[in-house]
Length: 69
Image (cartoon, rainbow, N blue to C red):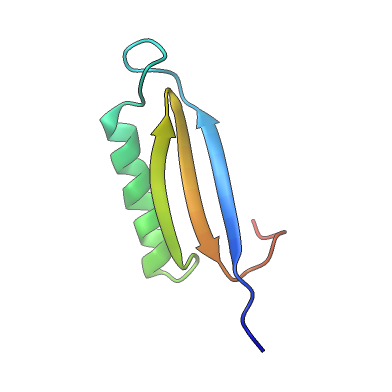
């Protein structure tokens, strides 16, 4: 039986830099650092930090199910 994988996407409207055009590079770096720790601790399997305009997106895969905190 195949293991189930959950994809979680968190969108955060963090405010733009400048205006509503981009996320500050330090916020993207912080997201990568924190999610990297989660991957090292095996809380998540993998991740990608990206943005669309001034919205930060945290994309994660894990095997803890849809109700995982």
